Image 1 (cartoon, rainbow, N blue to C red):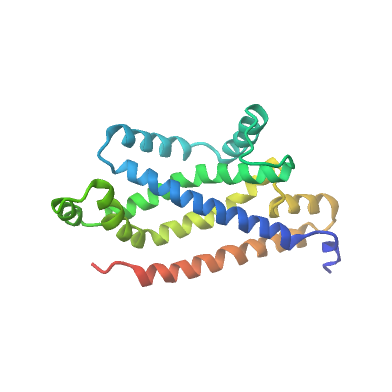
Image 2: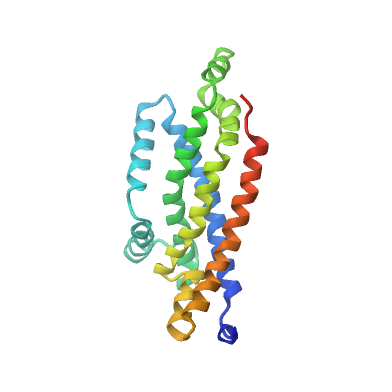
Length: 222
């Protein structure tokens, strides 16, 4: 029944999807946290930048951002984010950049929602003992905000895993790209679709279950 799989590196394609997800998740968490800090910060210019970034990027289709990363940055400006002229090599890096830029806007809002759950009195008490805004944010507010934001961040991570399929548009050999090739070359549309759907379920369902359990364990009791 599965003879059509011969000659196709399905596990390798899903491993590329996992790499895209993990690298983009780390980048999005870092950049999204900084954006959240800007949005709640005391500097109007930084608040305006954070607000504008989130509102603009969230309303641009991911495909447009990924294509801009490839056609705009690489083909027009010659930026490849590292050495290597192999298409799949620089396309992978640019795909991570595009996914990070897009997903960080949603990470920012998830973390900002977590920040809003932290009692104002705690931040005021920290400022009263002489801590700066940055110290209050990273030592007092964010540790509690992340505990409240685990579940929203889980949803963002699951969405990111599925969004990696857009990277196929710029030649990244991940799961969706392989599925497209197999559908074009093999007469097993239903089996191929079921196989890749099962593969993505194997990536997303355990993520949701594990992080959902973590969310309950670290939830702040009020």
